[in-house]
Length: 237
Image 1: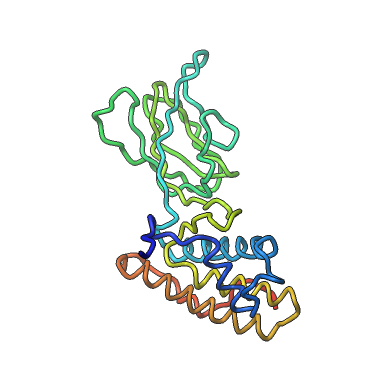
Image 2 (image 1 turned 135 degrees about the vertical axis):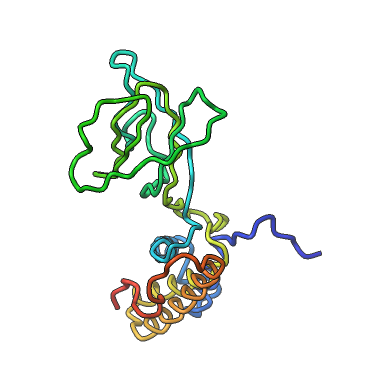
């Protein structure tokens, strides 16, 4: 009986196995998992960047953060960062949109907050019952502060966890081919096979463009930059 997969995500080992086959080393005598895994993670990060730059929503995440007024000042935190309490989600690369709601008013809808984009510091406003404004600067969300407990809903671009084991899921659907060809290109480059690396990289680019088109096609209302094939990924050959 065939094994029915429990998820549409492939595993890291699928990309590693294909990369070894492309390098004529299916047995793994040279290109072991330990050798290829850092290269696979480099390809994984590169693919995430390409998807994000093309507006693919697969890397979007959402989380609610509860801000409580400080007992002394009576005002909530003026920032949400990696070191604040509460802090930014660990997988947050960059926030995209924020909404707010009084924590006590659970029946209310979340109201969009306005992003402050002047390039300077936040406006010197007095805290009120709602936060109203936010800005992203110096890797943190800066706020005016509120005089009541506020729940902030953060929509953000996330970073996928690094792959460490062959059984780890690749959290981008149908990504085996672009990852395997890019991994093999890096492996070929590491062995000085520059012509092979260029050929493998070209195939990785085509596979990546196909993947992007599959994601973007149902979202044609979103703008796209020029196709991936118009430029080379930054792998110096």
